Length: 435
Length: 178
Image (cartoon, rainbow over all chains, first blue to last red; front, side):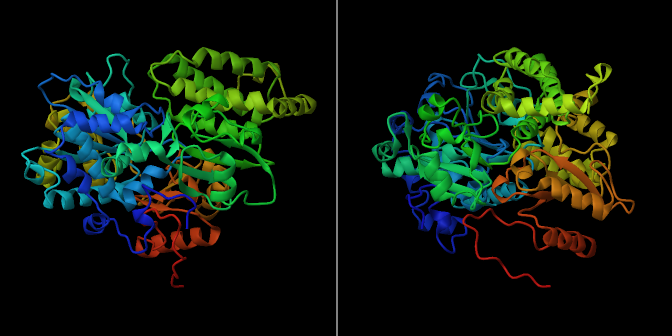
C-alpha cells in the first residue's frame, strides 16, 4: 500500500475499478456536482477553490481560483473552459493515467469549473497520440450525458454544460495555453502575445479558462471535503494538496506516485520509486519535466513544493522527475533534450527558432568529438540571447538543459573537447558543418 | 469525395464548434483515416467545406507531425527517442528495426507494410522504451516482445501486446499464448 493516502489515484488503485460511471458513482462520484450546482453560487465555488490554495498542475503553478477570478463578471456573451490534456512535456505521464483510468473524475472537475466560471461549453484538448484516452473520454461523456450530468438542463437545474473532446495532431507547443487556443481554432499552434490574457480574450476572443487535467481532477475532492482539508495537506500555505509525480529513468519502479507536496526528492526517489535500478549512485535528476534545470544529489533533501525547488535553482514544473545514474553522459543528455526542443520549436520567434537550431548544431558537434573550447562560450551566449526574448516560455525552457549541465558538469564538456583536440579531428573549414 | 462518404461524421464534427475553422484538424484526421494520408485533393475539399482558402488548410496541416502529407506504410512504427526513453534503451530499439526490417527513420519497407519514424516524447516515460504503431502504444519493449509485435502485425494486423488503459502499479503480467 502507498505510504501516503492518495486522492486522485485512490479510485483506480482499488481492485476491479474500471472507471465506468457506475464505479465512479459508487465511490461518491458526482456528489460534489450535486452539492453545488444550482445550490451554491458560482462565486462561492470560486471562493472555495481560492481558499484551498490549489495551484495549476500543468507547470506554471498559478493559483486556480485566482485565475477564474480574472474573468470579467459582467460579460454577457459565451465563456469557455478548456481542459489542457496536451501532455507532452518529456518526463510527464500523469494526465494519461488520470484520463485512461478515471475519466469521470476529470469530467466532474470540468463541470464544476464550468459552473464556477459560467461556461456552457468545455473542450478537452487532448494530445493527438492519446487515441485510447480520447476514446475513453468520449465514452465517458456519453455516459455522463445519459445520466444528466452533461448537456442542457444538467441535474434538472436549467444550467447548460457541454463537453467535447478535441484531438491535437502532434505539437508540444499546443500545451501552452494560447497556442492551445490557436490550435483549437483550427490554426497553427503559435502562442499569442500576452496581454490580452485568455481570461478576457481566449477561445474565439471570448473569456476563457485553460486548466490542466490534474488541476480539474482535484476539484470534486476540494468541493466534497472542503478547502480546509485540502489546504492542510502538503506544504501550506503556498503548496497545498497532493501532487502526482512521474518518476522515470534509472529507478527500480518508474511510475506515477501521488504524494503530499513537501516530501523530499530522497523520499520520492528512494522510498516510493525504489531507489536506483543498479548499484550505481545517483548522478543527476530533473525535478519537473524537460523544461526544468537539472539538479545534483546535493538537492536530494529539497522538498517537492514550488518554493523549495525554485530556491534550489530549478522548478517543480509539470512534476516529471527523471533520474540518471552515475555513468550517464550529461552532455549527451542535454543534447537529447535539446533535440526535443529544436524539433518542437513552433518557429514564431526568431531567437527560439534560430537559436534552437544553433544550439543543437553546436551540441551535436561537441558530442561528435568535433567541438572547440569557444563552443562553450557560444552556447552560453546563445542561451542568454534566447532567454526572455520569446513570446512564450519555450525559449526559457530550451536553454535549461544546457545551462544547468554546463553549471554542474562543465568538466564533461571540457573533457570531450580536449579529446577532440587530441584526436586532431578539427579542421577550421569544417567548423560549421553538421556532424 | 469526403462529403459523399462521411456526411454524417462531418455534420457531427461541425456541430461541436461555433466557428467552422475549429473543425479543421478533425476533418484532416477524417481524410487521413480514409486515404492513409492527407492528400492535396482532400485539403482542397476541406477548404471548401470550411470556407477557407487551400493555403489556410495547408499551413495548418504542415504544422502538425501526426498529419501525413504523403503515404506511409500500413503500420507506422513511431519510436520515442527523447531522453527518458533513451536512458533506458530506445536507441537499441531503433537498432532492432534497422536490422530486422532493413529500413532507417523516414523509410518504408519494400512491401509497403512498415514505415519507421523516430519521434519526440509520447508521454510513456515511466514505461519506456516505447513505440506507437498506428493508434496503439507498446511499452517496456524488449527484443522478444518487439519480435512478437512485428510477427503478429504481419500475420494478424494487430498484436495483443498493445497497451490498455495506463495502470500503476501494474497488474501481474498476463500470460500470453505462444
